[in-house]
Image (cartoon, rainbow, N blue to C red; front, side):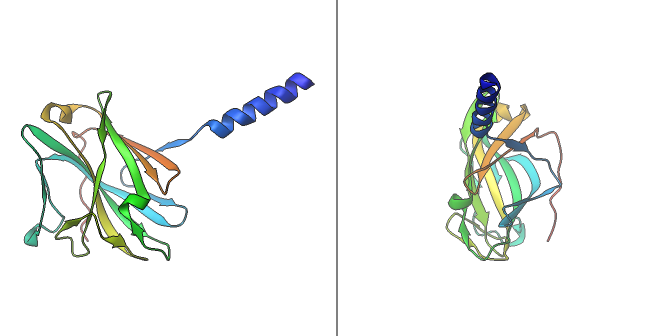
Length: 171
């Protein structure tokens, strides 16, 4: 009987240490703690990251010599009564061919003409967020995984290749 109790306690301890990482997919909306919703809009390799409204672009992000950006665009909706900064919501990294790359994040302004890291996402607001990393050009043909921690403790991963096309949803 003691062995069964010990095994049960050991199993409980192991399950408490295990962190579940949810695999996400395109074209599905995820709600986290009834505070935010995210939806993957598209992923692509770019020399320059532009905001969605290219008719009146105020700023963009330019890659360096012989490098490109891997950019994952999400639609973020704030369902809570709070306002959030990007650094309070998301942390993560990219992994390509067993190499880890820093995850950078930038928010599009409300009119989708500029990129910013200082805006907050207000209650009820819907905004686009770019998660990007700069990589050598030859990495764009590899399988890419982004690991995201959302709201401090919800872990997600999304694996994709740039040969898969996703279309942007227009507002």
